[in-house]
Length: 138
Image (cartoon, rainbow, N blue to C red; front, side, top):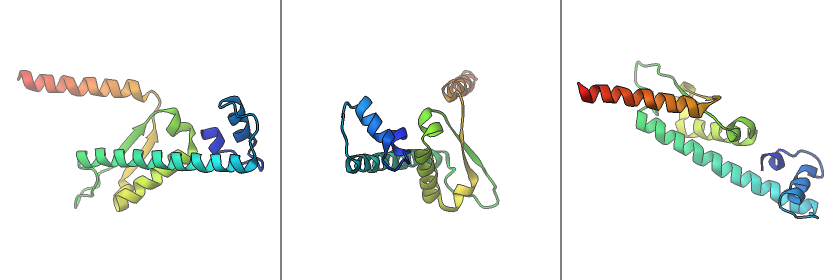
């Protein structure tokens, strides 16, 4: 979908190629390929906006969705995965939606790509869980 969405050729050759090779649609008109690009845009935009809403929900739960008076608190959101890393239009839409939802607070939120996010996340979860076990045993 990303390749079709990023196709800038006048005849949308990549879209035609993907339709033929993956979906087994041998002949597609330029009009059909343009409609496919529009559908890709709609789907990517919806996914990006839903992702931003999910991130906002986490920020709200952590109390990081508002600037507290006298505090300069920054939050870093580390994302892993090919969708965020390679699908530029998805990434840009998600980041702009997050800015739209957060308003002025967006200046204090940094979204970064993180390699091996799954491994890092598992390590953080294990570390935080062990802290709770120590508290329970005290």
